Length: 485
Image: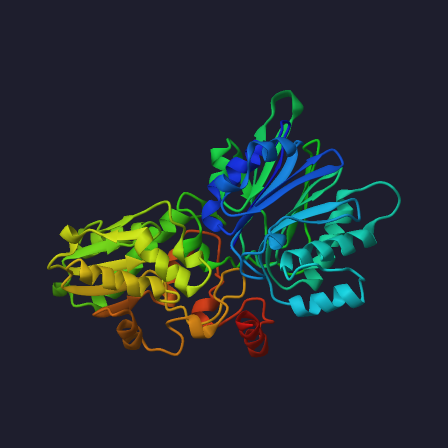
């Protein structure tokens, strides 16, 4: 999970990219990078940490040009603390290409060997983004003939890239002196949205970003989601062309975007994230009514912020009082995307405070968006008890996370997942809850896609079914052993 943005403008683009990344900060806090193109020249700034900490005035002044892209990183491959692996990545031929990527490639072993032994390209990091930009550069190089560049060269290169690369990828690239290229994997697992606005006498300005809220805040009209397998090229003069570059594209977006990752004020693949979370609460309420001892629940409480819509619907549908018992410190990062269990555990009490007046002597039903490793959930149950709760029923708006996620979310090993090889009563005991209730898989899928054109979701971490079809037990074991090394 990362956040990406690309802009072709009639004005200097540095501040626009910076503002866009600030809106995408929830998608990654490890590092950030901005690149701009001033004619044929690229300017790049990368740093560890969050957007507001990473760039100084002198950095922004050096980011010249009217075309640019940016990235906020949440590491799922490589070393989270290594600034060398911060995006964007650059190759100098053909033309000069700089690229940012959101997703996770699942055939990195094969690609690494192909690039080294067949394409004769050198890799300097373990980042799959460096792999992706080198595959793109190699395929584009094979399309070059004569002096002139055309969008068809880029589209043909993306068609060949789709045949070589497996996994999830939403990517934006700048091609020096020519324009911006954006493309999405054939399953559309990770989001990518296209927008435009009028630039008066100079035509149209364009933006591509991970979430629609970036477009709306910048005054852009949302044109559409970039389709699975599609590539879009925007020339430096604002002319846009697009082409479907995959043989059998099919839209199967990641369910976790709607459960947790995206901001509620975004719309992805025609689905409002906020509305999806309300529907998740409606479905969860039905399951709670079936399994929970209703006389044992006095109040419903959310874990702020992403579970709040679901919790409100649970309370409304069950006719139970809704209360805010946890106060959130907004200056601490999202614990789910922090590296390492010790760091997550340390941050829970820094992030949340339980107000004893809301807990004392009450039977509490807590609604969270999901339970992954169980670190945060266990600490929250303990906080509720220390604040005076009589009984704690813990509920999740998502089903049990039982399998690794290999498409861009940091859940690489089965052993770290609290639900792996455990029955629900065993998980409840591990968390210290009196009762534990999960959303059903079918209910989650139905709640998210209701009223949209989407017919299926990527739900591998809940079901063990990987949509790309090439994720084998051997690959999962390799990922786990590589993570531990």
